[in-house]
Image 1 (cartoon, rainbow, N blue to C red):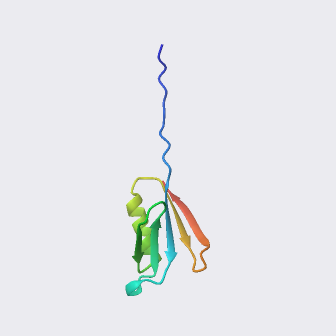
Image 2: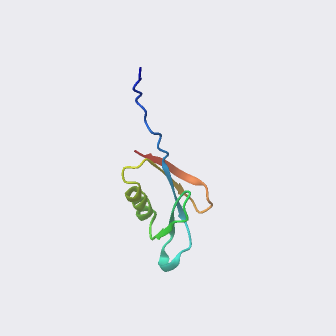
Image 3: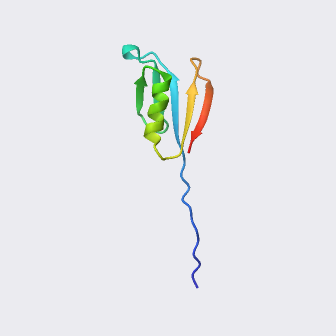
Length: 79
């Protein structure tokens, strides 16, 4: 006798950190995807957050925006 199980694969969300940095060409915001070495610099926090949304596309994600002193001042999930 076989039993059919409705198994759902658990998908861990990607975590993106948006941090202020001193960058080249006045690019002041760094977008870093956790567990990677990828860092991309942007002129504004809005551009960095938009890039995180685009990279995540339909994958679950969590975005953390950091202040100059390093603390997280805003966090939210993408569905």
